[in-house]
Length: 261
Image (cartoon, rainbow, N blue to C red; front, top):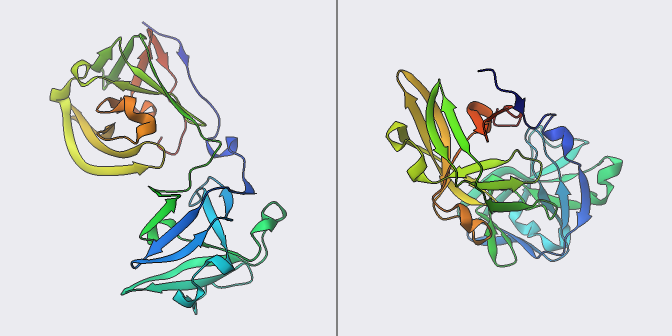
């Protein structure tokens, strides 16, 4: 049988616009047990690309400048000036910066300061901690129960098949198919130590799949305690579309090109 294919095409990053706009959210950054930035007038920068994710910029007046020490290394230039953050007993070298000559589309960021996201202890929107990067207000996640026939094949072996998936539709990303554990060959899954975080879904744990001598590493994930907005995917399993043969209603899906390809 030579099934037809269908699926998402195009460059992942090229489909996402980059822009700056004021955010109505109250945003704080914590480091070394101290709140080092606290503002209700932040600027939101939407950006995606290698080493670039959505983030917030703070007016200098809302940043604890007494905890920022000017950088002395080569990173400070005519493009940006950097600071090392020191609070409590902790130090994050060159973890704060300000653009000196931003491009026209980022001109509003002139005089504003941002921080290296993963170097900080915590980021908060209102009273909720957020992970990985700022949540863009133009990003939507919908989870819908379905009766589509889903089959997942790896190295020629069917490892999952169901007619009761939950489909997760997320802005700019391929549809993800979350499957009940009862409909997955759990005997072929081996838990791994990998855990990842998503600002829109929560913390995921992973499995590898072993079929014969072939091992597909960290190809399945699940959110054991997803954030309330995505609670319907709790304990369901999902495979990387990019790395498996995924059939939807008997049609082999084209493997999408994303950062996880």
